[in-house]
Image 1 (tube, rainbow, N blue to C red):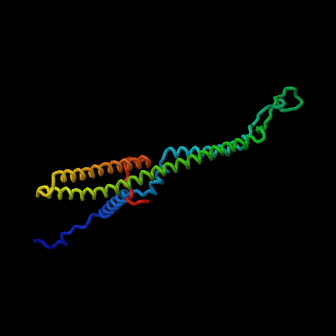
Image 2: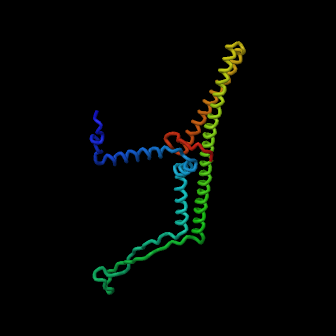
Image 3: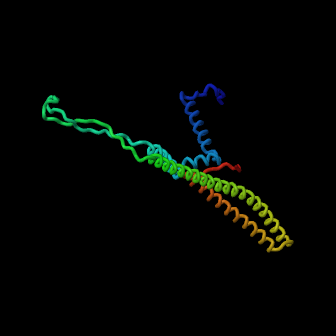
Length: 233
């Protein structure tokens, strides 16, 4: 048997260590990307990704710009005309004359009109901002409600599952008593029905949790339900 292991060891090819490091980095990044989502992060995503809030934010910016624009005088207009000048050599003693003139004109609205229009645009911008705050608060409330319901359903599943295990033991005990002629078949059936009822409760709770997670995904505009932190806020 050849024991010269070190003599037969082949060092890694150049660049293989860098490849291995890249693979490990990719695996760590994938693991980090699969970390459960916190409620605080979810709220930030909801406020940033919601298309309705984005459109309303853009509308507010446009109204604020309009409020500044309407409160200013309109741009002056360049006026071009002609004056009496000789058509040949610009001698003022000749009869053939033409008219050339250049000037600026400025339109002035009635007194107080600019201020009123600016105030009106400002009021519209403020109303849109109030609407944005209200819709943002409503969206966060909807997210928190679905979040808490999902956490409650998960905790309830764990509790009912423990009760189901205890009830399964009761079924086995009832069967043992029945087989030893110390219990009735009715006791066995009651124990089995109680166990099946708990299993049905677990299925309902799991369906409710799946629905809550789907609602969270819809609020966050995610392609699939996220993994959320199992910690009450």
